[in-house]
Length: 202
Image 1 (cartoon, rainbow, N blue to C red):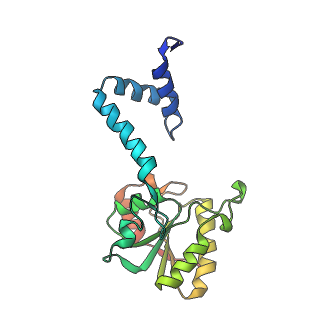
Image 2 (image 1 turned 180 degrees about the vertical axis):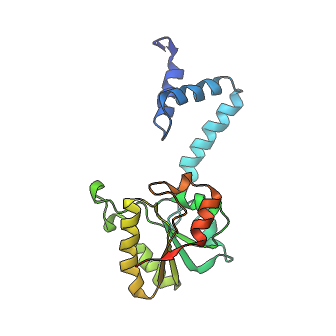
Image 3 (image 1 turned 90 degrees about the horizontal axis):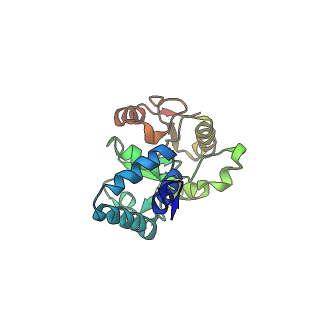
């Protein structure tokens, strides 16, 4: 069926792509017309990859990152420094930090940031699991790698006040990161410098 001069499947896919972050209608249309000009195999590969993403990816039961096997490869790697635990808001932040090759510890994904305006408090995050993990692993340093915005700072301060009394050094990524920016948009050098220049909270 044709709608406004556009074939139904084209309009439908433009609509689906438009639902993705940072993808507006114009970019969505460019993607769809690009796919139209590609071999059928390319479209099938894309479709298969999306289905595999939904069918095979799960959360790691230790760090709550995304993984195909549980526990994930990072938690299972004996070469990683078990005394270092880096706390991030989302699994995508691990991907950003791993690109730097500057960090060799383990991670813990909170599943968000403290944001009273959005009704998100500590109880909605995986902070209880973090405390249990620190007790179980004996981690000596907690690196808070949340975004340098209001929510990230509030979360970092909360974690510092909660965990520092346990005798764990709580540090924060240095401000090599732009204020108000997101980790996944930072380049590798900026992130590496932020890791190297982390500071104690409190």
